[in-house]
Image 1 (cartoon, rainbow, N blue to C red):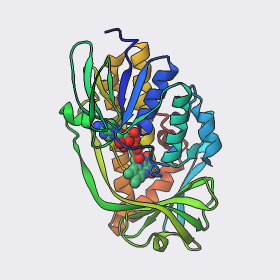
Image 2 (image 1 turned 120 degrees about the vertical axis):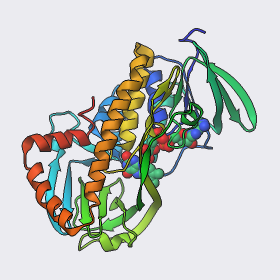
Image 3 (image 1 turned 45 degrees about the vertical axis):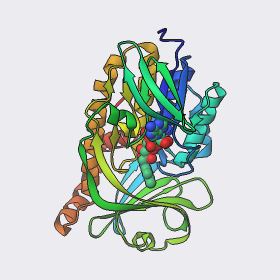
Image 4 (image 1 turned 90 degrees about the vertical axis):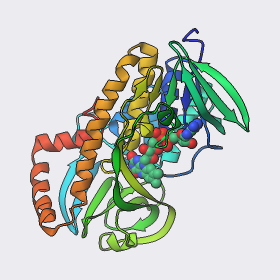
Length: 366
Ligand SMILES: Cc1cc2nc3c(=O)[nH]c(=O)nc-3n(C[C@H](O)[C@H](O)[C@H](O)COP(=O)(O)OP(=O)(O)OC[C@H]3O[C@@H](n4cnc5c(N)ncnc54)[C@H](O)[C@@H]3O)c2cc1C
């Protein structure tokens, strides 16, 4: 099989599959992208697009569109109750994207799909990857659309098919990790309050609770989330009024990393390979990193190095996010007091502050 004439097959048209297909198309590689859903998602889900993703999506022309459509996030504030204990100022970063963009995932996906369409690649909706096998040169995949089965041959299969990945299951790759106990409430709301529209605010509340808010495009719109069962308004700072809930979802968070990101000609990217808490806003961004790295290796050579590199990065980010999540959810008053004393001291140190800001923005993993 001629590697260049046969399309790479991407399973899954979430942000990660779209980013992979787009980068392949930009680099002149034939690609097919299929998704079992009937059409694009309208779910708000991941909001933050960090500096590293903006850098990676720049060559395909998507970054200026995200920057135009989203809200600039210039700093992150940590509060313990009503006391601000630390601020991370992204604008101090020495980077052309020294900010994050806040944009609902459905809008990011729309921009990625539009850019892909401009390069002549349409997502094949309603098309499910149901089975595949591989030999030394080819992946043989079975796609099902409207009950009709098609067998395709492709040089590579990219499994960007989410946390319940068919590709991961069929490769029989373990997904070790665990679930956190708490159920999270995630809402997009119209609200007024003391927090600015160019910052993320994270508030530690009693009993291991976290409440956070990030502005999203639209008059007075914010994404808010909490791991507590109370009405979110009860956890917001004084002076906050929630006028309207425009989207909500309750979900349980896991932290898991697949045992290997590849088996021969089949690769995993995004949630198919790693899931973790939204602390630090890395989830979708880490997937976009996988996707562009893999696409560049497929075109430029070096696919053999993909699995080890991305596995090491994901293990580090997921472990770090887990530490951050546990620190945020501390329950005992003594450990909370200790945390609230130590965090400002650490963040006051310029190297620590710089490391944390770069980590958040995906700039430490390259
Ligand atoms: C309620 C909620 C809130 C979230 N909030 C945040 C947040 O604030 N910050 C953050 O960073 N992350 C957040 N996330 C996580 C974030 O949404 C994911 O990290 C991101 O969607 C991962 O993208 P992906 O493309 O890897 O997978 P997905 O977005 O899950 O896309 C996978 C796609 O594959 C398709 N598919 C599956 N199986 C097949 C198959 N066999 N054949 C064809 N297609 C298939 C699916 O239909 C789907 O469209 C949130 C998730 C949820 C559910």
